[in-house]
Image (cartoon, rainbow, N blue to C red; front, side):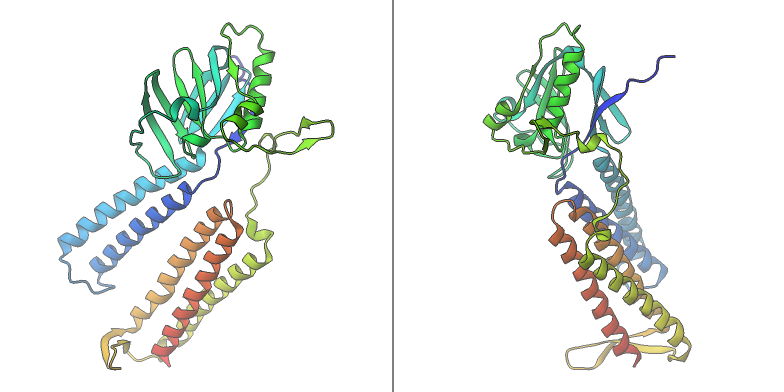
Length: 333
């Protein structure tokens, strides 16, 4: 059995807001499904009939599962260069572009910029689908708009991709192409000048003598969240965990001493307008936990784009938990 070709270069897709948008959609749909279940179980009061709650749960739950799959597929997007082909990865799909049949590799904007944009079944920052052009259909698997996409063409098909480091990607592709001298089709592989003419900025490190440094994608490194290197973010995360754990411990310690019924809310005139039981108090740590998980996940994605955004999300989580503590103490003291 022939051994699989070695991967010469492994490229991640360029980071974009597509991950944040997908996670926000998942959280909204997931929270809607959870609220519908809580209404069906009687944990929260709802004026909707059971049939409506079941419909909301099924629709929101199905949507959350679909978005979760697309979100995982978003983070799986990548492009590998082997001795034989360029592999475009998305979800559980792998498409090979034969290197020998390559005719063009360069900026997509000069060829696709004037094409009338057709709708792709994703969202901004996440482009997967087919694009109709005068020279044939283009398979799009990218995280950037057409102005930051590379077009790969053979004599039979076309792909639009968005590697994180396009210059390194094209240089590695050109090197593989030169090693395969038996390629029968002349290929036009763009260089730095062509990318600069298309409006790209592509600075990347070099070693002495002007030779490109070894691409970071080719070295396998364990993923380490920026939280482990950012003291501010780590402090905010630790504060969040302490506040949430303290809320749970406080409820466990005080639950038996609390009355069977409690005033959970007061109106603008200071009069109670909602009465509940001790069990209802557990909604505060439950909601706080959901908010914490959601914001930490968003921060993990945001740190790829902007460190301040990750800190802002974690700081917002601390504020939400402080407000939850205020509400809890107001009710129980």
